[in-house]
Amino acid sequence: MSQQDWMLMHRVATGEETAVAELYDRFETLVFKVSRQLLPTKAEAEDAVQEIFIRLWKTADRYDPRRAKLVTWVMLIARRHLIDRLRRTAVRPTESSIDAGAPNPADTIHPGKNSQESERNAQLHRRIAELPELQRTVIERAYLRGFTLRQVSEQLDAPLGTVKSALSRGLTRLREHANSDWAS
Amino acid sequence: MTTPKSMSIKELMELAALDAFGLLDEYETDLYSRSFHHAPASVQDEIVRIQAELVANESLLPNETPDAGLRARVLEAVARAIEEEDTTTLAPLASIGGRLSYIPVAPRPRLALSGQFWRAAALLLASTTLVMTFFWAEARNEGSRIAMLALDQNMILQLEKEIGPTFREFLGNPSCERRVFRNKTPRTHAIGTLFVDRQTQSAFLLLLDMPIIGSDDKYTLRARLEDGTYEDVRTFSGTSRNHGLRIDRLSFALLAVVSWEITDSSGVTLLHAT
Image (cartoon, rainbow over all chains, first blue to last red; front, side, top):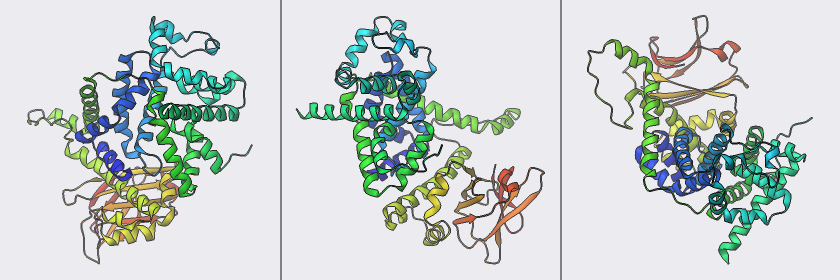
């Protein structure tokens, strides 16, 4: 599959219409869902999907099938784009507002979003809530809000290595919980 | 403070999730990639598997689906972006055409890139194709996959001889720049790329589909320097269509050349790269 994937990206890089369509059909759902996870409205998520596929075309010749499966590459490009977008917007939470219980400024800008937000990510938030406190905080800030690990480290006054470990363990646990939910 | 040159296998495994989600900073991402390439194949396979499983896990994502019309909008947006890049690439030629506006210009079909842009893209991609396939074969030790590209055996041998196992590191080096050649004459449809590594002051010239010339004739890679003078960097035989040549010990002047050219034995420029 990897070599076919590489050939697909090669065709995408040349601007071949059918290849772009094939790429879209394979990853539309995942790219849309990750966009929806990080952005407050469906309209913004759909705009982001357009931008992400343009970015995938622009970076297609850099895809290395030995380094990652295509799904990993696509999701990496998608997440990087979404994080860039989050960082560009003025709705980034300030340090004081990200303390537990404080509202995210994004929520104030999009009134009525809270209920949608909580429903949209309910499953994920339930799983995150089950994690130890540090893992939970780090995942919320780095994975869901786009803070760099260095920023999170400074906000929490915790060593960078500790933040990294907490994030890595937290993500692994989330995956394991998700797998066990699927199995049950 | 010392900076680690590579990550241990334990670190690679521990940071696999962060790498997959793009949560490492730029320096760590580079370090992770370099360390990954030096890790045993079994570790690489495991990391690739874990990362794919992690990012594709939809149970961590919202249960919403996009509107049916999104597909058409996205494909249209990508097509438009490609068109725009095409137009930008052709800007100098387009402005010449503007002055000669009485010459009718046929409309270009969407996504059918103009000849020149297509050639420029092909120059880069063909080189990438070859290089990537070489990596592929090198990594998997499956020489037969190279043959799928229908490259001639001389080219393969030349690449193996000239590049060796260090080629991947050479191209993976952040200080390695690519100069893509464009045809200067309708006599040739060759494509080529010059990879210049400022750090090691070396370069690699990759040329495909060059015209075959007599055994006594030579092609020359020459550089145009900032003061307008030319310096011959390397001559090579024209008895093969494809060439892969490593050039070591580039002078400092050659690291900042204005342009590169491939000329034939009579001094005519066939290919040009800026």
